Length: 116
Image 1 (cartoon, rainbow, N blue to C red):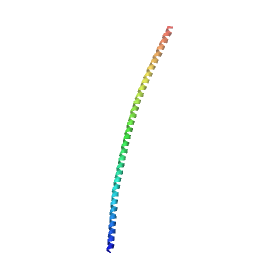
Image 2: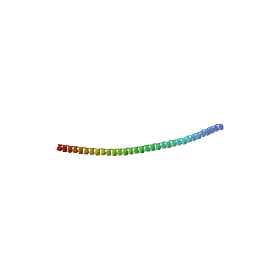
Image 3: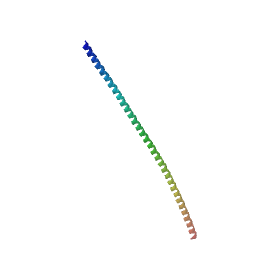
Image 4: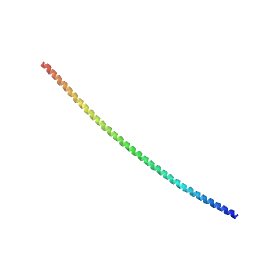
């Protein structure tokens, strides 16, 4: 009976030791998994932050590009308006010169007819 009791006690001790070891292994695995999860989470947060800052940079670059385009467009419109005015003024001067030339021709013809 004593041997049987000792065997049972030893078996119980082994099982208890095995259970304690299993619990410790499980505990270590949980700690390790938590650390991995935190590391993954921080990596994802960092990647998200980088992605967001890259998006903001691209958005700002686009705004600057649009601003430059608007400025160039405004400058081009201004230059075209000035060019149009110059052409209109030149046309008016040429028209006035032609009218004056026609009037001079007319006067000369009248003078020449009067002489003849």
